[in-house]
Image (cartoon, rainbow, N blue to C red; front, top):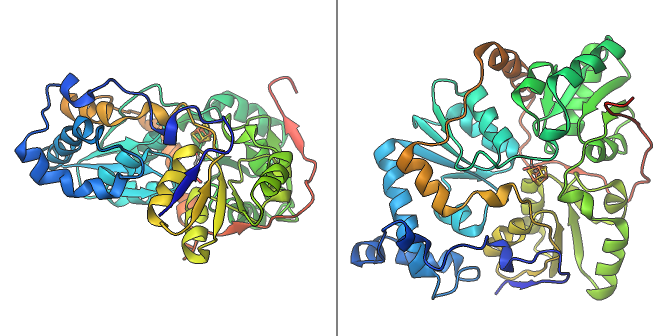
Length: 385
Ligand code: 13P
Ligand code: SF4
């Protein structure tokens, strides 16, 4: 039995589930009737650690309705690892990190893609699958990294550093990707940096906008990196002292961190990698006790698949990811809202940068970042510089 222990008050919503009205299904005129029970009650087992038996009748009708709507509208739900377990396990058709979801978007057969994730992920899907209707359940599901930089910022950086390849994190807008040579995700950032330096014949690359990801990549490569003063508002809240405190409070705990965390976290952690690399590490190594220094729902989703592992849970919520709910996925499919569109000239340019990334050899297992290394100092640009 997986145990979720809230070790700090960082997450004030139990198990990362967003607060919702007393009966969200009834609020939409959906009943917990015999048809619903027959269709979805067997799924309760999958979320029983996160949804109480009293809550189940209030969401089961939504799950049933969403699954019916998907078939009627020829739609598929791409669910990021940070979705709450009700979405991730019960309505997500494809689940994964941002690189895996981008690869799926490029290949799905269905006509409609519902992005259960944030806006930049929906844009990535639209860039790769322009003939599909791409919907996002909430237009407010943004990202602090994507908001930190614009296409104009990248143009100015390119003027300042001609001949240096520009790599941007997928957590950026289509405008930014359109100014980019090659994109990367946390899954392939080291690989992309080294490949770009080789292809451009340089010893320096620009990697923006996440300064912490850039610093963590810099600790893993000899290539010189110039970065931007962006940060993930969720991961920047962790620090190296948190890791020391966790080890003291929970002797023997295995500490896994996302590379959007500040470098002192990776110095202290046992393992670091993309959301899927973290999930994979738990699956393969089955540690007795583990902590994932990342978004809250990740621990819930990984715990559900690793019932013998004890999870310590000092997580931080991503307010943007948590804007996606079963209710608005239902509304999204009912009303066919909110459609994500991108001007064709921007899309074509942005696609080149994503295609360059997707053309790199696919790695069988998500690679990790070396931990225990000393943080590296980088040139960090901002609008003021
Ligand atoms: P991954 O690419 O590891 O899924 O990360 C996306 C993200 O937004 C992490 O905060
Ligand atoms: Fe953006 Fe951070 Fe939320 Fe990921 S967790 S979507 S990087 S704000």
